[in-house]
Image (cartoon, rainbow, N blue to C red; front, top):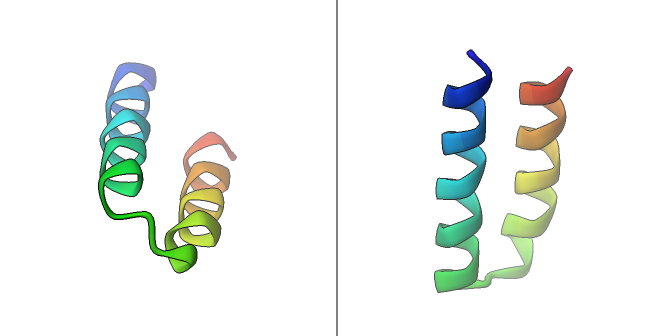
Length: 37
């Protein structure tokens, strides 16, 4: 499960760096919290 979460976070981070809309920052934070919770 940990590997899947890590891969998910890496993918989301890459997408964020590629697009960089301000909204994604808070979305990534929420997603990371839900994955790590």
